[in-house]
Amino acid sequence: MRVVIVEDHALLRAGLVALLRENDVDVVAEAETPEDFLRVVAAHKPDLAIVDVRLPPTFTDEGLRAALEARRQRPELAVLVLSQYVEPVYTSELLASGGAGIGYLLKERVGDVAGFLDAIRRVAGGGTAMDREVVAELVTGRTATGDAALETLTPREREVLGLMAEGRTNAAIADALVVSGGAVEKHITSIFSKLDLPAGGGDHRRVLAVLAFLRAAG
Amino acid sequence: MADAPPPPPPLPKLPFAPPLGAVKVGDLRGKPGEARWRRPLFRLALTAVLAGFVAVFTVLLWLVSGLGGFWPMWVWFGFGCLFAVHLTVERTLATDPGGRTYVLHEGATASTIAIVLAIWLLDGSETFWPTWVIVTLAAALGVHYAIREQAPVFRAEQLMDRVDELTQSRSGALDVQAAELRRIERDLHDGAQARLVALSMQLGRAEARLGDDVDEQTRALIKGAQEDARLAIAELRDLARGIAPPVLTDRGLAAAVEALGKRSPLEVEVQAHVSRRPAPVVESAAYFVVAEALTNAAKHSPGATVRITIVGDDQRLQVVIADDGVGGADAGGGGLTGLRQRVGALDGTFLVVSPRGHGTTITAELPCG
Image (cartoon, rainbow over all chains, first blue to last red; front, side):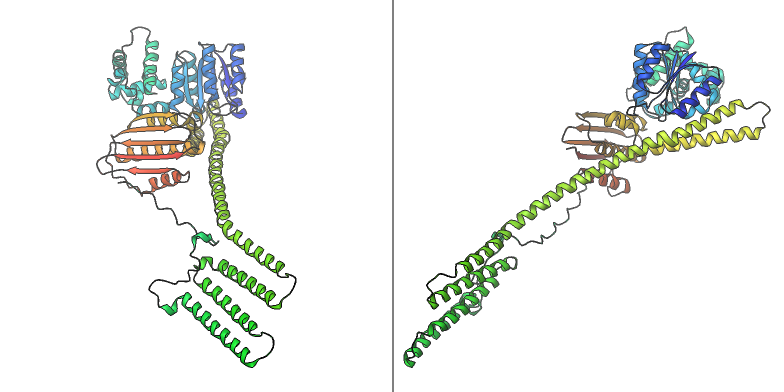
């Protein structure tokens, strides 16, 4: 897995690089600005970019915009956005860019090394990794768009879908809800059928369900 | 319950006299219904009659005594002076207090000029020496007149300039404050928050390096430190969001209000038409009005539907937050008062309509000029 890190804060950039290298992740390049970012993506053809939302010059959302531009130029690039804030606006813009391989995590999740590495692998593999706070906010907020299919989900099924959006495995979901693995599978099958997702390619269906949920909620 | 804004404070009294047109100047006829002898004109007539008698008497005395030189003219002159002083005093007293200084000056000038002319006539001088006296006195009166007429206008202009200055400096101060808050938010982000994230990362790496032989207490300490770092980051995040919400800075009011709507447990419908981004200070005032209104609605009317309308152009920004909840909001409550002050500081208007049982509508209108 070839990774580029886009972070203007030297301390955090060095920390990230060290953390990833210690765990045998191939960090091929680092960038501090949106321009550098696009240049290293073109030069190094990475699988994954880990991007800070705030980059120079205005330190608002340049990182997010650059990530969207990088994906436009190189659609197979997976993007994991790191932010100090949960902003549904940002996540929905990221999701609206289409495709898979998207993640949005609060920066402090990096402290949980195993969880962070897991999220990186999932996103690089075409999955999603949405911060649990993002998911929590999306679940609290009502679905203003009123997606008809999502409306038919039971509260429990929405809960399961939210946990899927965080990127949790069936076993982890079962643990979180204190139910059996079989019960989780039943819920997931029901979600797939309610959302009218085609059978076959389990992971793909999972991603589609999560995306449908996040897009409707975000 | 419509809540009227407090009345504006009374204008301060001008230290300058009002213009002459605005005061009643020397009406010698006195007030209607006043006793005759109290009227200035009557008293003046009395002086004139007395002067007339004395004039006639002195002429008779001069004729009888047969003394050479027509000396009674000096007596007449004396009584003329007396009459001039009396007229000046009466005219001054019959003037509104605001105009007395000028009327007195006018009377004194006219009297002095008359006296000087009389002296010139009486002493039979060939050259007309009173020219300079008259010119000087008239010029002094002219200057006084000009000051009287111009001062209030000048003062009003000064006050208007001052109001402009204060309006500008206040909005400047508010802009500076908004910029300062954003700077603090950015400093928190780049400073303390970033360091805490780095700390949490290092703790994570340290934990990952711990071998299996490490005792549970050490592991628990590192876990605890990590949890503390995480909480500190979360607290700083909430603090920063309360100071200057990043999405407001980045995406403007409509997006930030949409985000608020999504966070709210209520069903929130947002309609926004803002043709131009208002100044940051106006934007954040509008944002906090919406945030507070939504918090109140969620607290008092769970299950309500909220409709938010934002309309803005170059001139003004109007935000309306209407819910169909329980109503009966206390417009004098802490939260709403704070919003009213915040909007008022920007010369905006803030209205809460909340009849019991019929929902609450909060309207804030902010000038954007």
